[in-house]
Length: 391
Image (cartoon, rainbow, N blue to C red):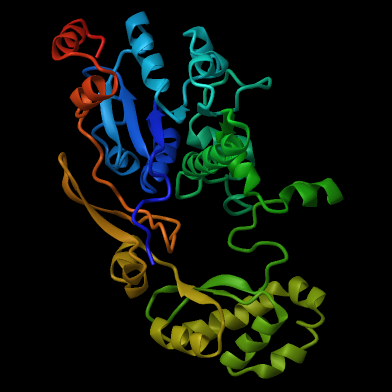
């Protein structure tokens, strides 16, 4: 049964990141109970403010304004970090050092501080000073080269995989560093590069190249060695993915489509023959799917235990009972947009489940709370700092 406190209760995170990866990392921590204070430039806020992605990727955070490019602003940031457990930032490598806010300098005041550093290419290496966004990182990671069809130029994936993947790895790194701090009493840096998040998810591409010396070409929906696995159009115009890539699943699939004899067909056994003749088995499945509606095909495949699913669009997701049962659709009330449909909290913890603490904050919404209650500034000091553009 759920406990009374969330998993990260008592953890304070200072988020100095912007756009996607760093805010997403901080929001993941907020959803499991961390107090996240977002630091933004006065008057303008971060560049992504006003966009739907800001509302989602910063949900559950608090916002203060602070000009960290000025000495007084950096002094206040240092005081704030002295109270924190984690700093999340995605400045260009070397920026904190140039501001005399290098992690080891910060740990002189707060030995347990964990500094999560997200950048395009990481904190060291020949490319560390190069600029990067998600799409550049996708190209550098190798995923763009293998996405698409062989007779056409490479294409980008449909999601921001580098940004969100880096955010997930950064949150994981922060939790690992928290555990290490329990053992050592010391904080450390978590260095995450956008391209490395994608590269780490590349499967056996490196091993394949190491064994063959050849780059893997683009192959459309076919992935070498994964057969049968394709998407097939049904009689009512939907697309259905069928993936039966183990021998047992293949046997169930052959039974499901009413052709159990295919298991012993020399074109498809032993497995090397099945891989070599993937176009033939896919053609058989294409004909079978074309003769049935999506509902009919799905029911037959489910009855036989064959992995298959419709190619969903968001309109399918919002109408799906399973998404609803798993609470993967939430409505968050945004002060800017009103109710916004958003994905739910992942992962699911049974004893200390996560939750969305609230919407993305208004710019500077928590200045009074943080600067007076946490740092002890007086209202008069606050007013002076605001008048001079420090906050």
